[in-house]
Image (tube, rainbow, N blue to C red; front, side):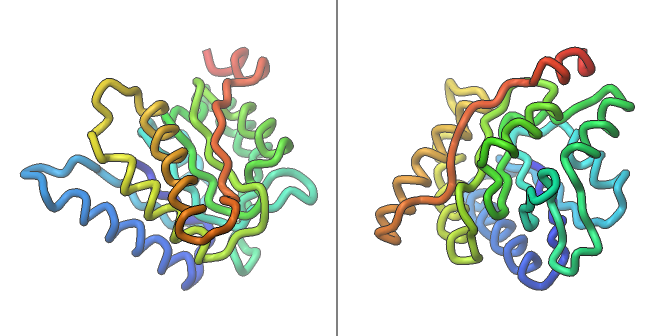
Length: 203
């Protein structure tokens, strides 16, 4: 699993610590960890690109979502901005796109059509994509992510691919979110395939 924090402020620190503690709780019953996590917090574009394109079962990106110009992950102080357009171009130069089984885009409005299109241009293969349909805060993220990771490793993926495992966990997390908050879940789950452009580049 790759946990990538582009938000880079105290709130994202707390969110990252929460996810890490949840995963440690899952690992505690096993002689060897069932989850290996790479935590990355950086402003360096090359480091961020490497984190985005590293092979993993789940790529969890923590950042503010913006698409006023193009779909972009940004930090709270606005000093770090990673647009998917730039990411796709840099990945194309290296011949390697996003190769995770699932992507959890933990930011505002990252599940809209414009985001889906931009993500598809960066993909090396089909993924389960989890984005949001509205603005979210720390409460929404905490409720959904705790349910997602609680469900993700409940059977260690027996008989399921990483993408299928993430899809199943995300669907269960949606149901749990509604039950716990009595509100519609802002997180959306979908399958995204590489665009024609991505298929031509990432062969």
